[in-house]
Image (cartoon, rainbow, N blue to C red; front, top):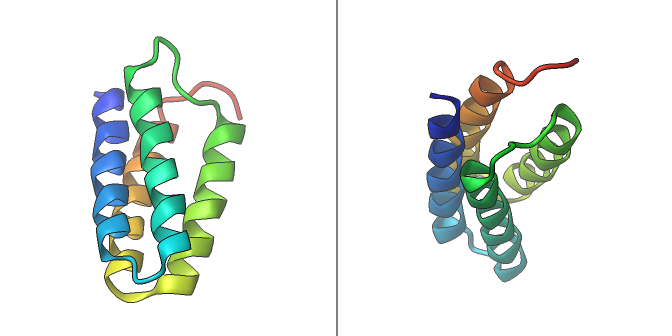
Length: 90
């Protein structure tokens, strides 16, 4: 199910937050996890533009943190990409 992919992304982002060494990165990741959790529960999920913005934020954090954070973010991005395939439009 498409919503399962968003839930998988939430879990991966939370794991990345737990692994983050920087407080700001941890806060940003927790914010991203909350937003994806909201999307997973919403009647209507995010559109392509919203997903692209989130992907950009996650990639920035992954580049800055590296290691376990980057690995967990890559897992989240895979889930987001799988969800994105189900979104109509672009």
